[in-house]
Image 1: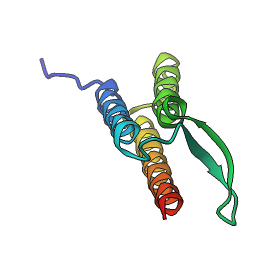
Image 2: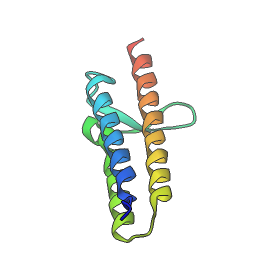
Image 3: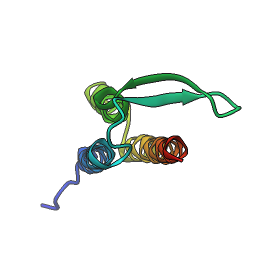
Length: 108
């Protein structure tokens, strides 16, 4: 009997990667900053900030909620989960890059 692949496996790997990506900036990016920007205006001004844990933990929490919802409702196969994971992973990388740039300009 051939082994059947579960579409949940890629989602678990993607979620693990997103959580790992969130753990690194929580410890290393913008040390000493109690609040981290979450949104910027087109002119580069910070619109609002959140505490470190919420700022870097928001995307993994959102990703886990989306994965659980899609898996529980059987609304998505592997491709949809992979797209969701990759999209949110990319959003998290952009956020980290913006926070690093923000912190560098604050230090100058």
